[in-house]
Image (cartoon, rainbow, N blue to C red):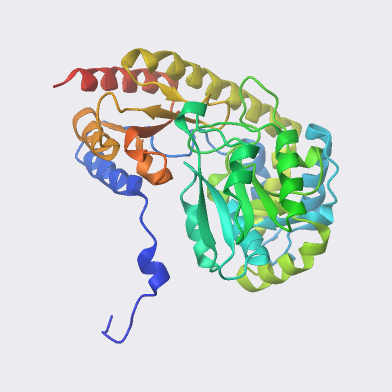
Length: 391
């Protein structure tokens, strides 16, 4: 690169995932023959469900590899709408559903359709870090919505209303969320959406962990009304991470604008991935997904029972997703350094709180992802206990 070429201010100000440095080091250690237990990656160890793989092969055999409409295959949009009706009792017009390259693509379309430069977007802290960068990409201003450890880092209507400002245009919340796994009742989310709408604002609800709930039935805000914009994905519940396919549910009046953006930014979602996703809603695939949810529930219980006795209190109820957010302040004042040492000295990789925000004292917290089998989780707990006993 010559001196005349420069990198944009936006690119230069995007911070890295702190966990990526740890992941790179973990891979180096594994290459040296070290046994590393991965609790840092938000991707379970399950393979893609076999009916999905079979549908993809069938699509390839039939030569279905050409472009689809920008909003996705009409049959897939219909199937998603039928799933909302059958599993959640929500009536969603297929015309409101836009299939996207992953949930990230759905969020980009939503923000692109909603934001003008200078518009503010409320984001939970702690929360998924990439959301801040997407807001900045469109000239928006990330506005932290600080959550409190005393309430398990739960978002509430009172917090949203108090954080809403003159320049706020939208709020983004997830249920279940990352990193705590907390859930927000769908009826309550609908009330928030109506409150935002009355202020000419928008509530965007991230439901990508929708099916991964423990102790309560999965639900959607769309069963209670149509005021919210909703993001979802085939990655988590359906086990299709590498297929990079998601969807956005937007108000009918906004869909033409969303489609225009999709035409220009993405052209269309991946064709084979869409045909594969048609099988995600089959009875066979849903049965596989439920079996896996039950395995995740057992892993969750194992960690929830073991961690507090090790001086590692869990923050929040971890009611969904596959994450547990843990307070490590009894052992360190620097959770990133603890993560580094835990990897180097014990061979256990976890995610530091610094990846999830700035206002919630992130140096006190780490995130564990129960994305490996129970035997490996037992090994990780044993290693963690020995590490914490070290001077």
